[in-house]
Length: 154
Ligand code: ZN
Image 1: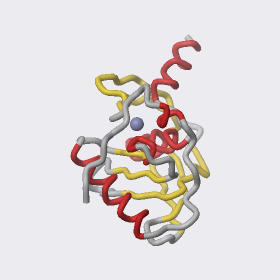
Image 2: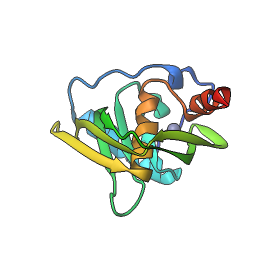
Image 3: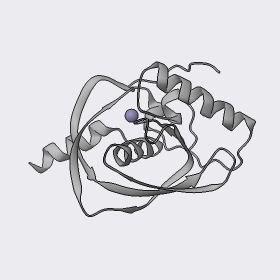
């Protein structure tokens, strides 16, 4: 396993849409291992592949001991709650900046695990937040974009 370099704001890779993973190989699993190690070393609670310069739809999350390490390949949000809440967010790619972001409180995410098996995750609060934040990265979206939009609204 190895710790990967985390790309920072201004790096165009963070603004590029990631590609669907067509085939899950040992390379994919090595990447998952390295992403988790990089996230824990940072330390952070989530990491998306574009943040380490790899434009594949892969995320890792670990928000608490209850849920542990969550790995999702090709994650898709398939349902969100009407209820939306404001939470403070930060990002390993946007150092020394946090901000309050409004997002759905609960989400349902579908994707694949490291063995290519379909998984569904129903999450609320912190885990739901992390899933949405990391899936945004796969679209080239950063949490600061949402801050700006909110500021425009008020
Ligand atoms: Zn982030």
